[in-house]
Image (cartoon, rainbow, N blue to C red):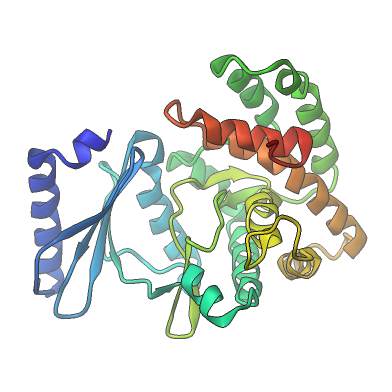
Length: 310
């Protein structure tokens, strides 16, 4: 797919679309268009303008729903997700305002993970706000990883990758955990599914969660797998389990305590524990790429073993 993103004919079409959109917005280009990101799954163009840089993004087929999803999120929660400057929903193309400074650099400069608290609070509030929009999310093409569908999807992945016996043996465990988690009655919604510090930007004192291409419709607590175990637990020095993640988990659970007064804090904590483990199974299914099977195997190891094996 990377050949498409660098194909002169495709780039000419993308540049023409960008120029059409920026003209309509009254933005004047002030320099050459750059292409700082080329991956199998997406590419990004940076366009300098009189109003600052704007960004074009195109996704490959399985992630093309991002444009429709961000459009819907911006309609429902405009104070938490910025509207796109322009979008071509048929092609999954997006034109976006500059989001600011990446949180990955800020946490190093500040030597602190405290910025994760407002991020986790925001993500929880987005999922709660979108609970009534599941049908619209699915219609927009957002993948269905709900608890009722996850066991079958996991089993299908086992066949697709010719999985090792211990991963296949965990298929029944996926179903058991889905049943246990469903019993808490927390409604399924949009779930980012790849929440790390490279997906959060800070501008005007606000934290903006971007890159919704991996988002799915699933249990909202699945987001804690990557955010807590895959990111925060490693701390500033990249040492596994060097940070106590409970305060961050509790920040995420705060909006749910208000939205679900029938559930005690202890029940929400247990639901979060189950979802953090099961979330790795969902991440393996949702994020699988045939060209990157190692990432799928690492996620399966996190699900089955609770850690990546050396």
